[in-house]
Length: 549
Image (tube, rainbow, N blue to C red; front, side):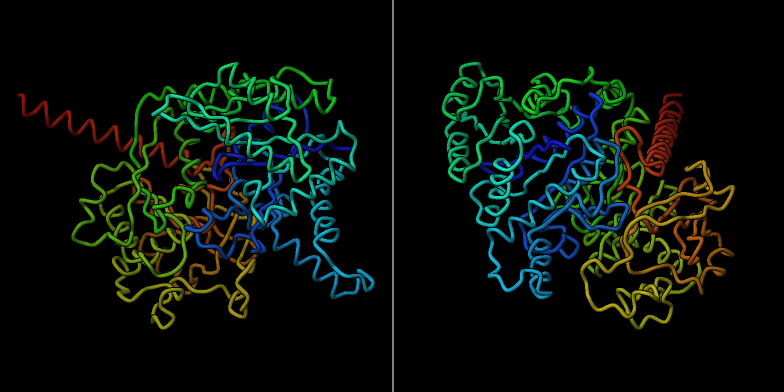
């Protein structure tokens, strides 16, 4: 049977429970244990698929097509193993299941209540992955903070499991904030004390307290927290701000978080952690040999988490190419034909990001045109690929009114059209083309060179597709469909062979990029940007040399 670790949070949100959970999982995995992580979100949405990115950051999609919390992206990037529908549970999904059972008569006339029915369903989900026999340890991250009304049923479920399961099978890790008051030049432990007290009042007592802090915790501070929060001093863990999230596992290794957890769980059969690849990645990340500047053209750039997987993929690909990737956010809504050169000046590559709706669309099309005409490395993802098709149709094929039916249902040239199977769908949640699908790649193309294979599988999240009625027209004019779904003929990849690097994909390669296996498309895109930067520097040197002569 698996053992269970619950990660809770207090004082404030966004402290980094997901990163702490992923870091702990990475360390346990490196010691030879089979580990998975799941996220319990307290909101009533069934999943984050219908949430605006401004509300909740990006929506991460798993191999099996689940629309999930972005923390599952961190889990996959740290562990290099896939998550699934079972790894993300919301209050909405819990209540939906219980209400459906009640309607079916499953409760035999009983009054359905939060305790025991809702908490029983939460506990069932918490134990589900552990009962498969695939894992030694299941880490459950509880969203929100202790004291939130919506989090109470989840905390209550943990309390019951602490009571029901053997003591050596459950560990509770509580993440809190130890703020530093600069005026007083002092770290304050009171918020942590109140957070632990509040959780203890619900019947759950933490075994380990992880303290987010800007300044080092002295032994006196640790001793004080241990004394007032009723834990051993060794179980008070310092989690200082790190330059990158990928340094957190090594910080937790120094603090012996994994050892303390294994000791509490009575796990004695483990090895020294194998983290050579991880450390090698960090060395490349911290000591790059050069720098490239990438323009991220998007609609939600005000919130960094809206494009979280893309930004992390740039980090992975940058390390692989031994370059620092500096991302410049450019809001597509403010790009015009008059200012595009100014907005994109100094870039070594251009990525047009995914999104939905008509806002900022024309700016994306103008940016694509600039990249195509100026031989600037271009990479389009999902909507970004669709915008490249529209731009090419308008400015190369002469289809001046080419558009997507998502933005203009009456366009005479719907080069991007709604997928046939989507046309009869009226429900919004979980009804897009979701999850992993195969793609056959045309031999000798840029896509073939990038992947080194003629067959790949990538994850999707879309309703609209390239209109194959126009495919012959596009290919005759120089834009090639280099990747297609073998069953439906859906165009997955479009590229321009005459351009140094111009590729758009219907799927989301950023969702499968990990530290140990960066997405090939991102690696090649950054390599192209690196070469573009070198050529640009060489031209500048030549001009300068000529002026001196």
